[in-house]
Length: 163
Ligand SMILES: [Fe+2]
Image 1 (cartoon, rainbow, N blue to C red):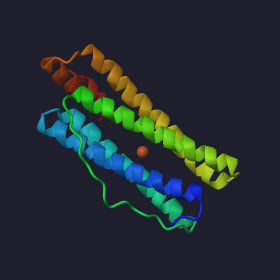
Image 2: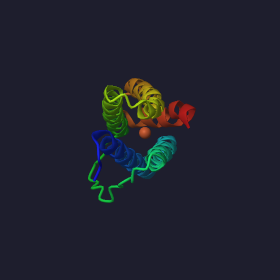
Image 3: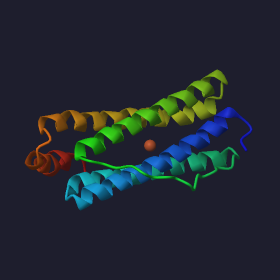
């Protein structure tokens, strides 16, 4: 389907961004139902961001004449048991995305494909930003313990800075 490894991995990245968009949307729904309004808004905004990341790769692949292949069979069975669990899973997912971006960047460098390497630089910086935000939220979440009242304060006061 793909002539070379780098195109295949770029397409894989496109699908990872799509998965992330859906994951954040599912997390947003959970928070909405549990009445964590700011967390729900924050996660929905992230979902929209991830779709933009997907679109950016989609456009790039078309520009370099590679047909994007979108995985239409995303199997989605993930349960959340707390707001802490949600942010932990979001952070783990971003770390996974970062590893993949670094992996493709490394291939691009080895192949001296500077066009793709340059394209991926934007994602490297973006991942750094996203991991930092989630890490800050997780660190702060520790101070609110897992007490229901505190978590609502966390949602109302702390997360309002991020939406
Ligand atoms: Fe992303």
